[in-house]
Image (cartoon, rainbow, N blue to C red; front, side, top):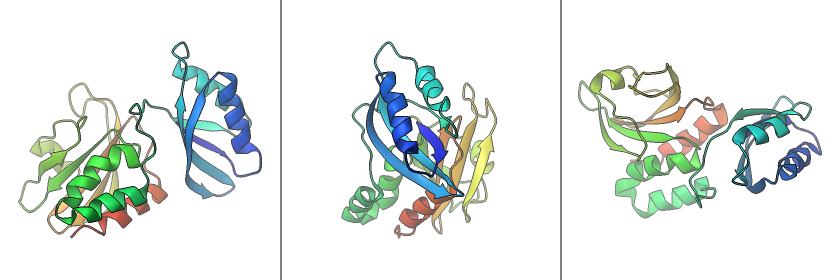
Length: 205
């Protein structure tokens, strides 16, 4: 769950208390971005079987200045995968560092899917993708261009049959490879998240 809250003492505690009142169990909290008197935090929370996600949203948004930006299911037992751990796995096998980064994106960057593209030909094609990635035709891939600069892309519902709105970020890795990371329904990738993606991408040769 991504939450925007005031950057002042007690705000985080108030959110934690609200979650506790509906018997939510906070497994982890990570600061995503800070600035302009606000903080964006990601919470990983276990809810009781009888609690709907709407309950936790309402509990948090009843607090002054608190807004739930996005809520989604998270892989059971996944835990938070830090950038450092991703870096260690990439450097342990540099030949497959690009594949490793793509495979870790759903956990490290709270995305639903990621795809590695070969951009060396006139029509880029997907060469590696995570389990939940949509099937990208060459026509769809071309909508994501350019592939030599970092940029966000917003795609409308049914851009792939049966898929809802998606927010994406395209990140060049090498001269002939790029990565596309997608979230179904949002939230948009923050500048801080894109900076982290760029940092890891720069390590790929």
